[in-house]
Structure formats: C-alpha cells, structure tokens
Image 1 (tube, helix red, strand yellow):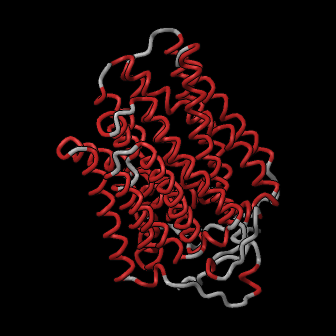
Image 2 (tube, rainbow, N blue to C red):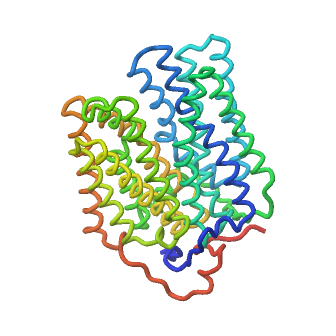
Image 3 (cartoon, rainbow, N blue to C red):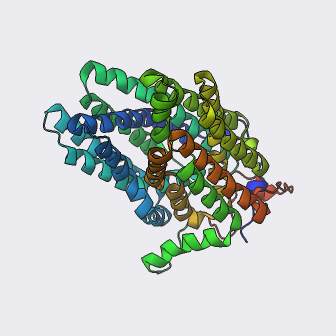
Length: 434
C-alpha cells in the first residue's frame, strides 16, 4: 500500500508562499478567477436576455459542467501523460477564445442562444482537461509539506473572487452591458499565462512509457481509488455532498423569494454570508494548515455542515438564516479542502492527474445532477424540504462511511521520518525527473 505521507508531513503557516513558482501561480489565479466569476454572472444573464426562460438558462449551466462529468478521466490521462505546466499553458490560452467570441457577438448585437450554449460547452470541455492538471500541478510547485496551505490559499482566492467578481459584474452590466464582462474574462487569462511562462526550476515526474490502451490507463486511476479505501471513500463523500448539500444557486433563491420573503437584495446577502463563511474557513486552513490534515476534524466539519443546513431549512428568521449559511460555508470549504489535501498526498505522482479527475467529477461534474434533483424536490415538496432531505442524505452517507470504514476518519499517526519531512517527498514508485 502507498505510504500515508499525509499523516507524517508537518505543515508550515503560509508555507506555500515561500515558493516563487506558487506566488506567480497565485497572482495569476487571483486575476483570472475574478474574470471567471464575472463571466459566470454575464453568461446566464445573456441567456436570460435572449430567451426569458429559466429552463434555458439552466441548460447553460448543464452544458458547462457536463463535459467534466462525462469526460473527466480523459483530462486525468492527459495530466499524467504530459508536463502539467505545458497542459495549463494550452488550456488557459484556449479559455480566452469562447470568452472573446461571446464578447464579439454580444457587442455587435448578433448574439443568439445557441452561441451561448456552444460557448458554455466549449468552456466546459477545456475545463475537463484544465481542472485535473491544475489540481495536480499544485504539489509540483510547493511539495507535500505545503500542499494543504496551497489548497487553502487557492480556496481563499476562489471564495474572495466569488464575492468580488459578481459584484463587479453587476456594476459593469448595469453601466455598460454584458459584453465587457466577457472581454474582461478573456483578458484576465493573460495573467495566468504570463505567470506560467515565468516559472522555473519546476520538478517533474518520469512518466512510465507503458503501452497500455487508453481505456486501461483511465481504469488504472479508478482501480487505485478502489484499492485505496481512504481515497475511494473520500471521493464518494465529496460526490454525495456535491449532489445533495451544495445546491445553493438552485435552492437559496427560492428561500429568499418564497420562504424568507427578502427578495433579490436578501438573496445577495444570503450568498454573501455563505461566501464569507467559506472565505474564513479557507483562511483558517491557510494560517493553520495542520487542521487540514486531521481526519477527525474533517468528520466534525461535515456533521456541523449538515446541522447548519438543517437549521437553515427550518429557519424563518433572516438573520438566523444568514448565520446558518455562514457556518455552512465555513464547514463546506473545510471539508472539501481537507479531502483534496488527503487525496493528493495519498496518491502516487504517476496517478495523481487521473485521481484528481475523479475528484473533479465528484466535486464539479455532478453539479448539474445535484441541481436537477434539488429543483425537482423543491418543485414537489418545497425548498425547505428539499434542503433538509439533501442534508439528511449527505449526513447519513457520511455516518455510514465513518461506521463501516473507520480508517477514513481515524486519528493520524505521525512517526518521525526524515524522508517524510522533505517538501518534495514522494510516494512509493514515484521517481524524480532527470
């Protein structure tokens, strides 16, 4: 079995920022992620302007995330076969194309709904390759010792951008319209591209020159996840929570409108509360990264997350609902970031891209399925019951994992191993590049 490196590597406060390559990467991500969030607001808004149909707006989201669900393992094979920086240079460059096309057609007044769908699908297809490579690239920049800190900083950027990006997009759309949001996103990728080009002295991994058929190479990653019980169970837990407990954009608007009666203004505050909680959770892990390697804390965070969602489902007081979402956001990012860290540090380098493609499927790819089930339950039983049922299902699965596979959330062992303390220490079978 692969050594549990995650259990023996000490963490350093903000240790990821000691690495020049990661500082470049983070700077590029700060800019490009803000642009991505601007487009995430502009794309459905443009679809709504063109169709005035909530269903057709929802199909844009489905078109964007279905490629990750269906073709995620392909991205994992690419990430494991080629140098990840080269893969990211290609994907980040390609991202500029659909954004710029949407800018051109919307600015010229020739935008049609099918163009938005195609742009969403193309973006999702690029994401299918980009996400596994980007997730697996982090450890090459910072090593295992600072991986948790890097994941937490990435999450901090994502959640801060989730607050700032949409706010900027709203102001831009109100002032000059949606086209500028697409242009801003297209330009923002240049920062990520420049950051990648400026990196140097990146470690690499010698890729095995086996001639396995493509399907068998995909199966190799899935086979490892099945053999390694912690990795497999964490992937299942993340997928279940993504399906049943992460449907904020589907259910919270219904709470704001039909349950709490606070309108669009209140909806914004509810999302901001959850985003603030997630940001605080990510910063907590950034400053205290050892917390992100503790399986027991991960279990408690998940259970508190479930309790917070249940509290939100029964609350009819706006302030209490905001408080519940604040706690839910904190626990959600704590659980997901810890899962990311543990999965990556348990996975050998030669398989990391393929395993992280499974993680992307679990966290992102199942999103449209989760939105569909949440919307159907809300239509049938109402938003409070949909939220409560989802939370109960997620909590029940997690409790089942904790009872049937106790090693997943068992206390860590920390033997004193010099090899494990090395920032670039690898798992058995990993070889440094020449």
